[in-house]
Structures are given as structure tokens and as C-alpha cells.
Image (cartoon, rainbow, N blue to C red; front, side, top):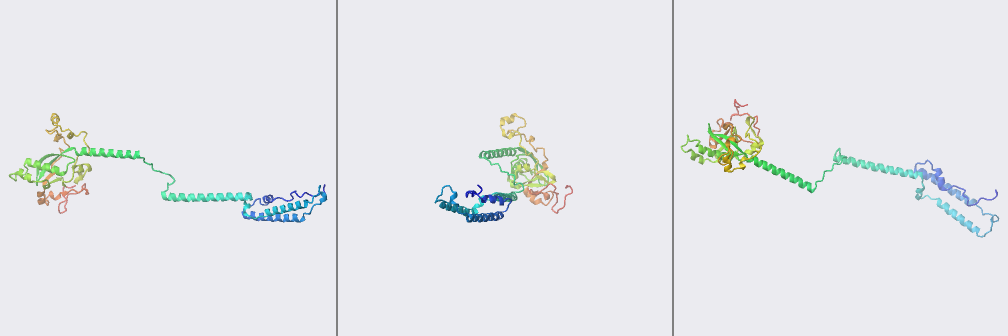
Length: 363
């Protein structure tokens, strides 16, 4: 049995993949793998050629049934073997899929590199965003979107507050106050008390004081017909001097009350409350009701003696003829009077004469 030749179908050499698996263990770089693969393929081709050269025609006597077609079949098998060897000797890039662990390792490295690149890009974008929106850009603060119902509710609340303020303002302006005053022509002449509202203009007070002057016939010692002289006097001919401040005609009392305007010597020009009364007596002007209740006049109004400001010093409020002032504005006290300036601070002002000299009683 030992003399029997080996069958030609028995594989004598290892396959290409087996040799590659054996000779490429531990390789990392793709260039090393390609070099080793070329060597293996070259060796495989050389062995294939040697096997084809050394192969002889088998002895027909050893075959069970002599067949003239066996030579042809043998030739066909040799051709097939050559084609197989030729197919194995290929250096195309399509064999990368059989690379094995090296290719897998290279793919992992590519994936890790791509992940690192993506991470660097995301980090760069995050830094740009942080620079654009500040240090706390990572905290997403999204403003709450207002719905139509919320906007309408806010508008309704604002409108309600506006109406409430207007009602409060109207109540304050409708509140009556009492202003005691004197006529001044170098001396203080008692004038009485005038009833006005906080929403009235200064010229309204001057017009009422003019009527008081006509009734009292102020200046009758200098003129035979003082009442007729007062009838010729207009509102523009009169001035209101509060302390040492000349109050222009177009201002409302409400302006000084709400702003708590301070004059010289840190004293309020009009020291009246800015709050609306709990119940406005002027809203119930019924004559019969007014006559039946104490503290009411014949017109159903609140008694002037109960009004705010009734007990104030009358000499602090002077009604002055403008023509007299033009003739005597260089003489004290008219020389220290000054027209009201809303931008000026009078709190620590020192009264001085026209020459700039401070008065000895000034603080």
C-alpha cells in the first residue's frame, strides 16, 4: 500500500486564507499586511507552478478501467487548477474584505477618529454659542409664550388700573380746600378765606379773591369808589405770592399737592393731603339734605371752617396787584420774590436782596 501514489485530489498545500491568518498575526499597519500578503501569494503561485511541472501522467495500468477520455479529463483538471491559481494571484483592492483583524482594527480606529472629530466640532460650536450668549448659555431659558387669552387678560388688568387711577385722580381734584389770604400793597390787608378745589387753576383762586376784594371794598381809603375799581381789575392784573414764590396762573393746585413741592426754608408751598376723602361731600349737593345736616351751607356744601387749610396763616398767601409790584419790586419784601421754577431746588436757598446780601434772619 505504501507504493500506491497519492491521489491528486488530496490537498498538499495550505490555502491562501490559512497562510494569511498564520503570517499576519500581530500586524497593526495596513502596509505591513499588504507586504506579507504579497509574499504569501508569490509563494503560493510558485508552489502552484512547481506542482504543475512535477505532475506526471498517471499509469493507466493502475486504474481500474482504462479510459481513453481520462487524458482529456486530466487536462481539464489541470486547466481548472491553473485558473484557480491565477484567481488566487490577485492584488486588487477588493480583497480588503478578507483582511481579518487588521481591517477590523483599522475600521475601529477610523470610527474613533470620526467620533473625536465630531466631538471637537460640537465643542467648538458650544464655545461659540457660549461666547455669543454668555457664560450660562448652557442653561436654556426660553421665554414663556403669551397666548391670546393671556394678552387680553393683561390688557384688561392694565385698563382696570388705568380707570382706577383716573377715578382716584378725579376724586382728589374734586376735593375742596380752604385758602386764607391777605391783600398786600406794602401792608397786609385781611382778605378772608376762599374755597377752591385741588384741581382748580391758580387763576380761579385769583378771580375769587378779586370778588372778595370788591365785596370788602379793599382800598376804599384810597379811592372813593373801591368797588368800581375792583370791577376794572382783571385776573391778569393780580399775582399770587406763596411765601416768597410767585405762582404762575396756569398751574393747578393739584400739581403742588401731588409733587409735595418744597419752597424756601424747606417748607411745602401747598401743604394739603394727596389722598382722596372717603366720601366726597360735594357729590351730594342736595339743598334740603344740606340744610338738615350740621356743617353744611345753604348750597349744601361742606362748611368752609371744616375744610383742610382753613386754619393756615393767611399772611403766607398774598394777593398782589401786578402794577404795584412793578413799581416796588426793588423794595423789600418784593425784592426777594421770585417766579416759581419747577426745575429749581428751593430747600436750602438763602434769601438775598438785589445786591446779593443775605438777610440776617435767613437760615
